[in-house]
Each structure stands twice: as C-alpha cells, then as structure tokens.
Amino acid sequence: MLAKPEQALQPKLLVDGLSKRYGETTALKPTTIAVQQGEFLTLLGPSGSGKTTLLQMISGLVLPTEGRLFIDGRDETDTPVHKRDIGLVFQHYALFPHLTVEENIAFPLKMRGQKSADVKAQVQRTLEMVQLGHLASRFPRELSGGQQQRVALARCFVYQPSIILMDEPLGALDKKLREHMQFEIKRLHRQTGATVVYVTHDQEEALALSDRICLMNHAMVEQIAPPQEIYSRPTTAFAADFIGISNIFRGNIEAGTDGCKHLATKNAKLLLDKTCTVDGGEMALVVRPEHLALGDTGVNRISGQVAEVVYAGSETRVLVDAAEARLLTVRVLPGQPIPALGENVTLSWQPEAAVLVTP
Image (cartoon, rainbow, N blue to C red):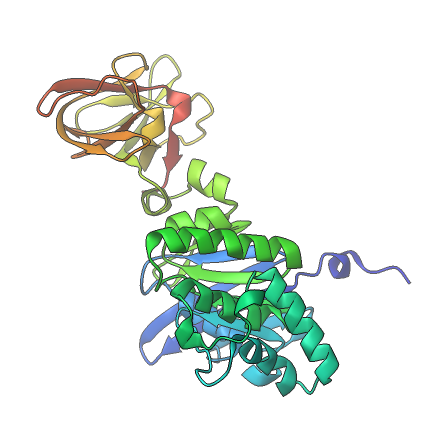
C-alpha cells in the first residue's frame, strides 16, 4: 500500500499552534513549527522571547494552554515527560557526583532495563564517539567543564532518543571552550543523524550549528530560515539587528519619475534595488558592514565622522556617526587604509547589496 503524500512528508516533530499563558501573561503566542528527521533546529532569541517555554512544552515539563504536539505523527501533548522518547541536555550538567563517567553514561540504559552486555557495548561506543574512553573511571569532580559537558552529551546520545533537546548547554563555558564544544556537537549530530532542537541566545552559536534558525521575539516566531538566509535576507529590522551587525536606515518608500524607487530618510534618498516590489509605506533598509565601503564607489552615499575604530583581529571595524543613523559600522580588512578618529568620511554601497525589511 502506497503512503499518502502527507504521510511521506510527515515531520519528526510538529508543534501545532502551541501557546502558553500564565494568568494575564503570555509566555508563548500560538506557534507552529515542523522539524524534519535529522534536522538541527535552533530556537534563538533574547531573554523572554519564548524559546525556553517552547522547549519545555516539547519536553513535557510544561503543558500548553492551547495547541497540540506530535512526534512521528503521534499526539504526545498529554504524554508525561518520562514516557516521551526525548533526551535532555541542560547548561548545568546534572551528573551524578558519586558515579564514574562510565556509570553516568550507563545510567539511562540501566533505567530502561537493558542487559548488562548491551549496556557495556553501547557505553563503550559512546565513550569513543565523545573521545572520553581514557576518562571512563573518573568522577565528575575530576573533569574539566568541557569534559563534564561531553559526559552529559554522551549520556543523552547513548540511548538514541527520538529527539534531543538542548537548553543553552554551553552557557557556562568560556568562549574558546564554547567554540570547541560547538564543533563537538556538530560532529555528534553528523555522526548520529539525531533530530535536535537547541536553545541559545548566542547568534554566533546558532549560525555555526543550525540547519535552520527559528528566531523568536515577544513570545512569537520572528523568522525561521537556514543560517545563510536569515543572515543575508532578514525579513524584519529586529532579525537584521539581532543576527550579526547591521546598518539600518528607516524611512518611506517613494517612486521617482525615472521609475526607480527610493527610501526617503530625513536627510537622504537611498536608491533601492530594481527588484523592489514595495510601492509605499514605512520600511527599513539593511546594509551589512561587509557591503559598506569607505569612499564613494557605490551609488548610495552617506557622509559622516569617524567616532571609533575597533580592532578585532582579522578585521577592523570603523564606527561612523552620520545624520541618517547615529553609528554606522564598516568593516576594514588587513592592508586597507584605516581613517583616523574625527575624520570626515564618505560611506557607499550598491543598491543590490541592501535588503528592504519591515521596521
């Protein structure tokens, strides 16, 4: 019997109109998201955006006010936490201090009643996967923060749950170790093909790890897209500002006598890309620092004064105080001339390098 088209495309996880209210406070507005088998989806947003509330409802730790939750097509909305085939990894490792690394990883298998021989084999494979075989007999107190987090990851991956949920698992680590653990998580995801829903407020982490990013703001989804798209084609000023560095100009769309469209700000008329389909109204124009040039090589030009020069290793960021926007950021690569503080400069860009978004 052939599967119906909708069955063939059935997502691993379907959040169908989930919402959560606490009295008069809305923690999450009605939200619908489909996550495919093997996908790494990151819930990204500032504090209070609803991302942790959504993760808690997926896990079963919090029951929704409205909506349904489906895993592999089964309605799991009212299924208790311990009966959902879901793995959880938190910022605080929650390792048993009296158990060794090996015993911590074996714990979920033993709780599921697996045979000792099977437990030993699975633990050994997982230890090798997270490169902790040489530390199997150590206790958590004898491990570094990164090693403890790898044990927590191994304990989750060892029993191959249907979905793995991670709530800011790298939040307690320093920057260098956090970047290394991002690589470890990406490697584990690639090796296992697990379906992962990951929560973070760190935009760089989201860009590095995700197949798709679900950007949240004010208890709702702002934009959901692959990392490259959400960075290069944001749909709102918030999305552009939250992910990466953006130069944002606000104004109204006007049509010129030559058929071209402009964004009219208080002090300038900025030419829009010829593909623009917006006929009028208030909008915002986003130009990333890498598309902004020092000098008048671009069609759109803005004058200003250098307010700050920030050295960032592989690049230098020049902050320019301009009438159209208080501080504009332009990226200067090694070998390129850097203007002095207080110097008057011209910044320019091509219309096709900018993105028109809702304000």
